[in-house]
Image (cartoon, rainbow, N blue to C red; front, side, top):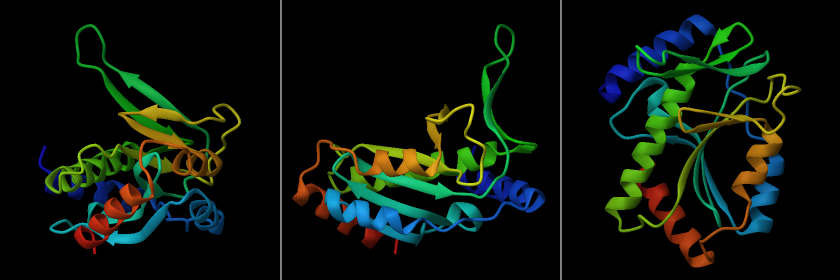
Length: 186
């Protein structure tokens, strides 16, 4: 599926769901400073529009680069797997009564774009992960989050812990990746 087709599908689904974006907590900025990380907020993705045209938070820390999108979807998150023996397996994210698979697809598309930018600049060794943070969700059943389509769907505390964790990048590597991503996603 072309990225532009995905963008139209995501925008249509979000228009029906009325999902609100929730601002990243100030605790992330303090934690990144302590861990030697850096972040860009509300970054444009060249050539894309709608939900796919903007990354909420692009974070680079010692553990790598993170695409972090936040949405205030109420309800209990869970993963639904359709298909199996006869049909191909497909994973869906459902939060309360909202089907939020489009959010997962948007984060995956952003991860692919960030990975391509790092690869083009010979920074392919930098790990890239996608986090979908749902601060308004009921996390009582899955306190550590869950994984849907290679995207980690997590509460804010888990997202914070992931982006400040130790990893393969030193301070110079963090600075190089941060500068590159800031230039590409201006």
